[in-house]
Structures are given as structure tokens and as C-alpha cells.
Figure (cartoon, rainbow, N blue to C red):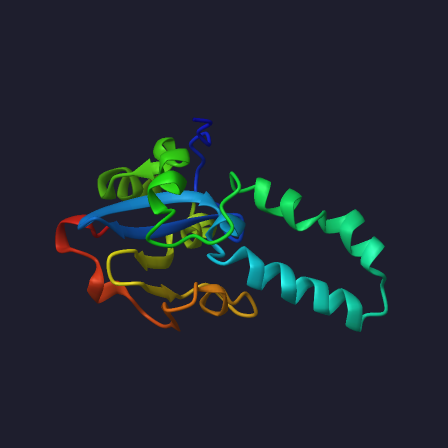
Length: 165
């Protein structure tokens, strides 16, 4: 299984995500676009925006790629949900961080880089809930799978005390 290399948090690029899966809590740091949970919804919106701007479908496919190409960037996972989480997280195995690691990195970061260490998402695959505090206009909560709850709002109270940093 191809695993993504471990990356450092970087504002608006590599985001910190709290994940609950099979009653187990982990922190992950990975490129933000991997965390838009329903790629079909995202692709459909991008396609509509292209159409409204007067650009052709050919321009869209040239810039974004076909839907299959688009999904291949996330190992063919169209919808990230409780059924695909194991496969997805397997690819992100090297991207896991402990609270101690994140705390140390944040402590060592320059003041202007501290924002890199703010968690952006909380995804609970066991309860089908996603919370985002990622700055607007980015809108992760609009891309949750059908049957999921997606909200913009503080999730800090949901982080177990021993996992806070």
C-alpha cells in the first residue's frame, strides 16, 4: 500500500485533523484536499463553477481532470466514510502524530507559524460526524457524505484530555 510521507503542518496546505475510528483517537497531518470527504460533491461544484464562468467542459477536464483522475489522487476513494476509512487511513499511517509531538513542534515554531498548529477538522467515523474550524470560504462541512452531520464550529471539548496539545 502506497503511504503518504509524513509532512509538517502548514497553514492552508497540510492541516491537522482529529480522527475517531473504531473508538480509537488519532491526530493526522495531511494535505487539506484529501479531507473533502465526498469527492463527487466537490467535483460537481467545481464543474458548475466552470460552467457559470463561461469556460468549457474541455477546459475543466484539462485543468481538473476527469472524475476518475480526480479520485485517483485519493487512491480511488470517492467517498471518505466509515466504509472507506480503514483503506484511507492506511495510506496516512506515516502522517499520524501524537499530542506530545504536536505540542513540541508548536512550542518550537516561530510566533508567525503557530497558526499552523491549530487543528482544522474533527472527523468521527464511529458517529458519522465532522466538525470544521477551517477558515472560510473553504467549506469542509458541505462535503460530508450523505447521512453524515457536518458542522462549522469548535470541537475542542470533544478531544480527550490526554490527546490535547
